[in-house]
Image (cartoon, rainbow, N blue to C red):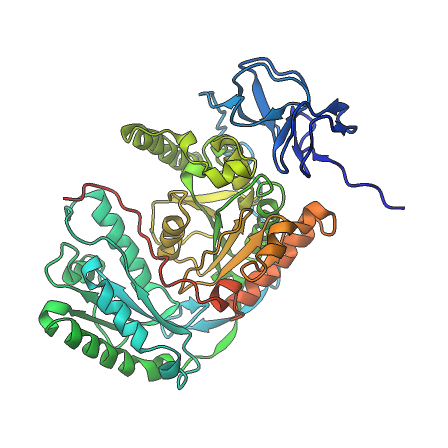
Length: 508
């Protein structure tokens, strides 16, 4: 006879709320907590286990996720109607929990990577058509559309031709922060090892001039990096024809690739959670964190981001910083975001989306505490601005917004060559030229959206796998994806529209 499944999940003995494992009706007894539900509590939502006075801190993960906005009785549903944000001090204790450097594997794991002539390692083999400005986006797409499967069938070593288009590039100052961010982002994609060749296309009169990109970023035209402008080429039709001709010249050389074993140290793994629910911080994110610990032990790099979604949990990272300087870099970005949101008449707690809240997440503090679990337990080795090239090993942080396509665009520009994306509500994100591995937080959603999900981390909640076992499974899948295995988002053809650089500054 098997034991019945507990009605709730207690994450820490010091918590004063527990998480409902299923929809609980009013009057449902929770024997393990010796309480009875006063009202209905949806699956994934919180139930108070003790009497909470108005203003008292509500704790989950043994951390503060908000404060009671009124008296809350044991057995009462705890959510946005009775839980609020307040400012409170966090002890950053820079480096206090820094661990000794990891014992790297004597024989690090390998994957089947593509070695470029200059020594860079790729996980995919694409050709990119990069627009400097929105005005050249249509031409870029027309060229890519003309070079689809029928043309590429003769070049089986090429994964595809990707249009990298966006809505920016003009009506801005060439000296402001937003222009620099866009410049860094475009440069990062042009240099990305997953592109065997790149054609950069401008209109000709925009602020983001091709010459500016080449000169400021020390880039030079060569057979694998071509540039052209629509105005100089003679308009749309002639530009499309010229672009097709230039890509056709690139195809034979780009096709001459083969995969061979390379160390895991060449993997830069982007970490993202989107369409989150209350299970994100209980199943998929901790499991991904376990995979990150394995990756770091084998010499690889993992990139945590989404600065607004570590707010309230940043002290857990600063304690693991390898130096005070690294920890203070992170806090400087937190302070910038506080000022930025205030300037735009917003606040950090505006971050949780309607879907997040429907899934049981009440405040940004609660969301953040679950989000940082993606980063595992190793030291924080560096903090990077958006889209800056990532060179450090181990767990690093990149300052990005929480919005998934903007965040991951920055990580890919920084060099991420594989992405793990956890989701509880069900995101269908993809990101060419980089494979995206989708990790479902719960079995119900995984089964409903199995065509989009690669791994069901809900097994950790169901009791059929431990966090450690799931972490090993994710790590193995990362190696397989880096070696060429197609992920669900790739099989669905998703990824041409997800290049979204972070837009800052005045549009004039």
